[in-house]
Amino acid sequence: MNYRHIYHAGNFADVLKHSVLTLALSYLTQKEKPFFVLDTHAGIGLYDLSSEEAQKTGEFQGGIAKLLADPACPEIFRPYLDAVRALQPEGTGEGVRIYPGSPFITRGFLRAGDEAKFCELHEKDKEVLLSRFEGDKQARVYGLDGYLALKSFLPPKARRGLVLIDPPFERRDEFLALTAHLKEALSRFATGTYMIWYPVKERGPVDRFAREAAGLAAGSWLRAELMLYGEARADRLNGCGLFILNPPYTLKAQLEKEILPYLVARLGIARARFLLEAGGD
Image 1 (cartoon, rainbow, N blue to C red):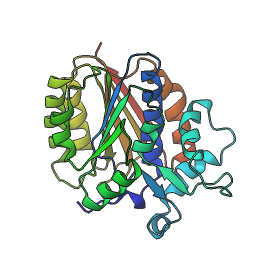
Image 2 (image 1 turned 30 degrees about the vertical axis):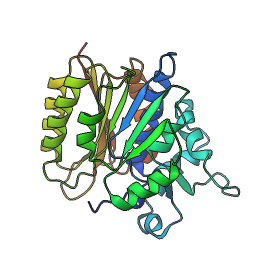
Image 3 (image 1 turned 90 degrees about the horizontal axis):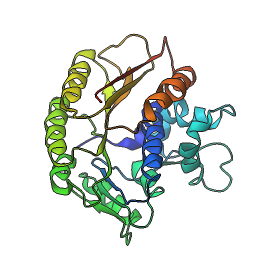
Image 4 (image 1 turned 30 degrees about the horizontal axis):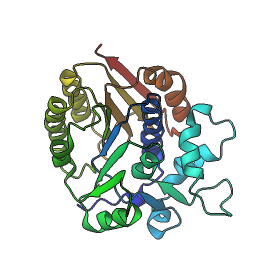
């Protein structure tokens, strides 16, 4: 694995993924029963945006920095922005230096009795993540292939929870692998909420995956895409999407009326747009 998220931390794709993640986690906390979270491709948990790598691309400037700088940012983003602001060193002001990955966002929502498992296969990244959750009995780190983790850790004892699948998409057959492993995961834990992130380059593989994932759903599903450009080209990252199985029932309206329109207006580049589809029960 060569992918290093530090070059992309806090970009538009993280904004979509993590703002929706906070809403899904918030929904799980509305019931007293404990819940479980499995993060299959967890990364290092925290990212220093003042680092040489992050500064080289500056992608966070077109993502999280724009939200933090907007005094009119909608209230629905508050849990997400609060999670980011809570990590900033003194003197950062309204800017951003430290960006939380999904493990730290998830950890902030766990209550007594809730549990999270974070998987990271990259040896150095795994060691960093282990050091950040050392001694934490509710949030445990595993140097395990994320797809194998679906077999190893599902179904959870809690019988309710969220599975975040966010691969680096280094494999040419990543969408095929996603579909196959998602099918197996659903056979083990059919009622869980599954949130799959994907990049949008060529439309063909993306649309094929969405059709196949929808065909696996026994319940409801959502497909949400944020497109920075109106035209999809294979030579660039045109946008990204989330495919969500068994989503919170409130999420479709939140995406349609608040999250996606705002992100298109605030982060879009050229004829930006969004896509939202829903199906199932």
